[in-house]
Amino acid sequence: MDHLLYIAMSGAKENMHSVALRANNLANANTTGFRADLEQARSMQAFGEGLPTRVFAMAERPGQNFAAGPIQTTGRELDVAVAGDGWLAVESKDGSEAYTRFGSLRVSPEGLLQTNTGLNVLDDGGAPIFLPLPLEKLEINKDGTIFARLEGEPANGGEELQRIKTVNPALDEIEKGLDGLFRRKDGAVEAPSAEVELIAGALEGSNVNPIAEMTHLIDLQRRFETQLKMMSHAEENDKAHAQLLRMS
Image: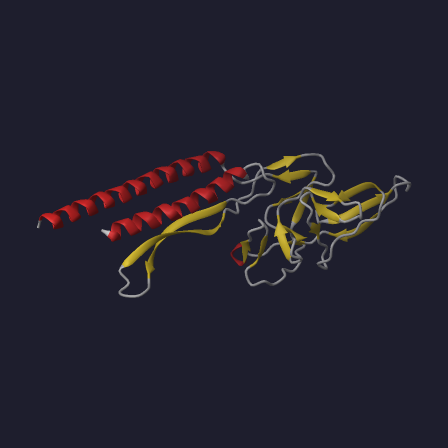
């Protein structure tokens, strides 16, 4: 009897993990550059004292959906979208180099080029990008080179500054962290890539399909209800067996 109860219990528990993952995808349907998480379930052998006679269900996050999101034109000079494959290099909160498709940028009061979430954008050397202030004009070319003109300079003035570091690692070599940023699985720093092109004045939307995520959530809810019914049947069967033993 405990076989049925154990399988149903572990399935219901992991089902809730899947619901959380799908709900997070749905919550980020409008997040710039977001990559939807994938989930799957598989059976796992339980080992411990005695014979390995128990199997439980385990939900896991095997990877992400790397399909490109829709490109949305904004006209804002500090918005950039990655055209095709590639990533922008940023400095994460723990100081490590990480990669993102979130291209909504800003200039801090200190002159740091940052994402609108406060992460420093890195140059080809892996250092934060400092811009001269005050700026009158700022452009980002398709290769990531930054062109800036200071206030008071003539209209034909200005100069090229650093280049935003763009990378293009193999997708099977990177993984998504709990902070939503991507890093190499081996912990190494990816070399800059000159093949990545940026689209100025545009942002890439999330690649989450809200209708598909809602459908998955409904399916997961039905699975959870089925697993609860199995647990209830296991209890009923246990009571029936106990009653038979008392009669015998």
